[in-house]
Image (cartoon, rainbow, N blue to C red; front, side, top):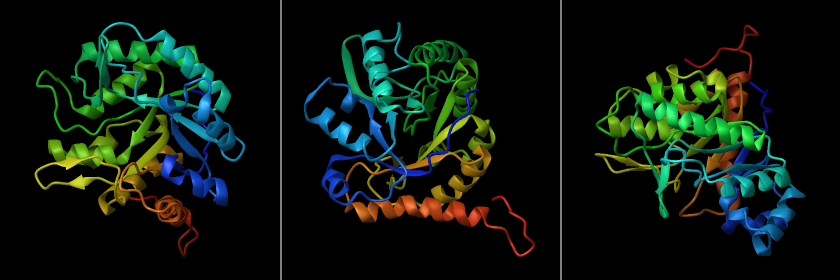
Length: 285
């Protein structure tokens, strides 16, 4: 696999924070953008994109590739994405292990796939084509699933691992999604991480969620929970250290308070990497 740079600790770039960022230019290692918001050829989005590119590294994260949709990839979409990737000089791009459309209908949601060998073959081939076409590494993100297909024949982590291996691509590992799915489908999230080749991870996502008791929703509108921070330690150590990003997409806080969640990740990693009294570094359990 192509080596992946460690960009540090970043944040999702969202419109409510634009004014603060432009005025204060806070110290952030990178921002992640939603690819589809900047695939137009002009206008205000492109103007803002160019301003941000003068200040920060930007990563591309998509929501509309729809790897699981029957039929071929949308080549017009890939052409626009490739042009954006070249403009931003992103070292990798990412999208989700899901389907979002059928025919001309877009569901505007990330829908789960059946965990079957047939789905592995279908999705991995499309992922391989997308990565070859864009000529940069592709990180596929795991979902936070509320429902699963009854036709599935394997656990989610086995399916996820098989897809990225067969496509020879990367994982964009969302640790909060692992926790959310573990609650909804009653498995040990540590078993999920243990079932993955974490050396394939190119980036980690963190986020807050909403706990409804009987189920959990991945809402990206709250602070990262302690249980997710615990899983993050395992994932980060297993990956060998990769870029980490915090998603916050609703109930927005002022930028400094949101950025504080990013700084928590950096501080946690620094503590994990600090030698103990014997001069040794102890990895998390």
